[in-house]
Picture 1 (cartoon, rainbow, N blue to C red):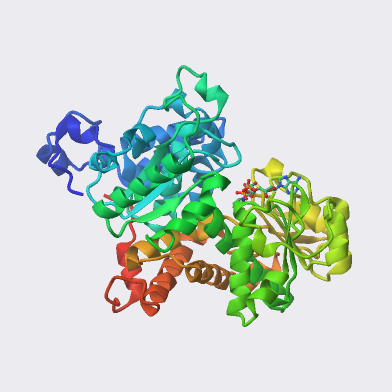
Picture 2 (picture 1 turned 60 degrees about the vertical axis):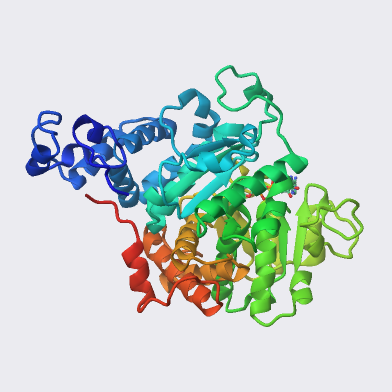
Length: 539
Ligand code: NAD
């Protein structure tokens, strides 16, 4: 994107192009900036240092997030340099968990327009709205309809913080060019009374539109996007269960699209399993896995684990037979009436069972995976039972936020006498137990989705297949070192995220070329091709 020959105040007030105090003497003369800035030019490093100093003066993560929001509006290059250089400190501020509070207050703090808002009232005119997008070329869209934002429920148009924050992570973690990404919020109304009655709420005040009208709206959106940007990758984010599975099934083979809640989660959890079975010196097909929760995340994970077992040579039915779901009504069995379609492949011909611990005793799983948002559900007795049955029980407590974690890291290590192969959805500090220090790491989607997006963009892949998510799972697991494993870490350090994303993207491009999904010529050196196309914030 050219800087449109901006000069003077117009340039300084354009956050996409402004370098703030970093203009040199020569630039200041040429661009009519003399006198508009303090006299001594700064460097990008100095700017980052100053902004980090400011950031750390704020007391709460929310205040810090507001500060960062303003910084991004003022100088996007500086913002991304800062996020990149301090990813561990800043990621929780620009995305989960802080983005949740940011979204809840979105209408009350709205200052800086970003991305596109498309309302169901705009039906028939979506193409015209896309023409208003701030950028001419778009490689990637993250879209939400705000129905199920994190664990916070229906936030309506306030959900916009999610696609904005998520795309910031694509840029920070994988170098997806922010000038070619577009956050989109589809406003189909909200069923949240609090917003319907809030005079400052900025979305349409009517209940959510569903059914045929909703489907037609989404169809028009996809067609308009594809017509304007035929190779654009679309990532669904935080759609409700009633739409997420349907939309993915409808569009996954028609367009380059995926759902991170379902498929990105699956990829990173499978990656954790690869590390766990490496530590156990077994293979995935040897595991018997009981899920607590049977929603988007759990069934997405279960499906990809089945694919991974098939990849190892197991028959699909045999693979499905090793995967059990336990939801709010108990064990998912064939006899249950009105079973949602995404749970059907995993339903078992067994007696109903409504106690999770009892299920563990009956089924004797080697692994339990918590994706239920039920804080504390992995009780002492549950963990101890798993440890009685298994030499190295696999215990993944993946629910967010921390208060919803099925157990803490300390509980998992203590109750299993240090034997658990543990990963978590929320961050936990290292735990020292009987003189050994364990470093639990988060099964954080950020290890994989940025690289998946970058790989899909750079290969211009026609369809994002399940193999893509398995490839990302393998890549991330292969970057876990023996030292990581020895300290109980099933994931690499998140400080390596750019390196991991580059590798994930390169392997996806290779896969897309091999399977005929890519729409590019084979680059001479795929890793170099990825590196050359990664956005690196600088002046
Ligand atoms: P969802 O609403 O689609 O599913 C929740 C599931 O939990 C449902 O199947 C529900 O029946 C079940 N459940 C509710 N109460 C239960 C109970 N008492 N006992 C057993 N099951 C119960 O939500 P989701 O998107 O699948 O997310 C679930 C959790 O996973 C959330 O906390 C989310 O933050 C977390 N998550 C973590 C990651 C990650 O760590 N990478 C990724 C995605 C989701």
